[in-house]
Image (cartoon, rainbow, N blue to C red; front, side, top):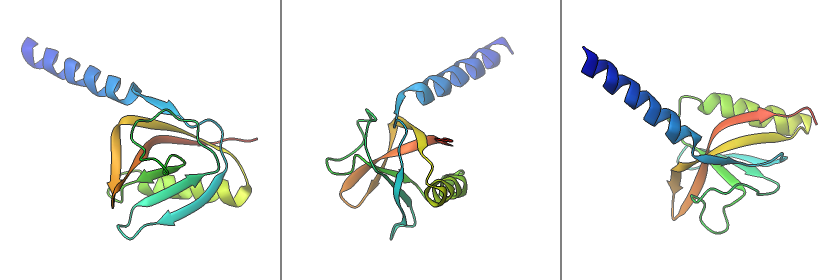
Amino acid sequence: MRLKTTIAITLGLLSTSTLAAGSGTGHQNVASIEITSSDNLKITLEGESHQSSCSTTGSETQMMVPFGDRNFEHFLSLALAAQASNRKVYMWISNSSCVTEGSKNYARPMTMIIRNY
């Protein structure tokens, strides 16, 4: 019983530390929102300030949410609301979970916040 508990706690700590490895986008306006030919959500920000190693050169301002992501609809709704209201967003980007589409790699947002300024 003690071994099972230790394994569960260790796995929980590993998954938490994996999420922590990332960087933020800073406060950005949403420039465009696209559903790609692979049904992924591509959110393009006006600027780029994250430190993700995922992005292929030329795609630094583009974030990709895979269609199968359980928060796909939430990201889509938040991006649309931010763009429609001209509000800035802040995203936390995973450095260990990249999305590849075609020949490019994109940063994958883990969280998104609409700012009031």
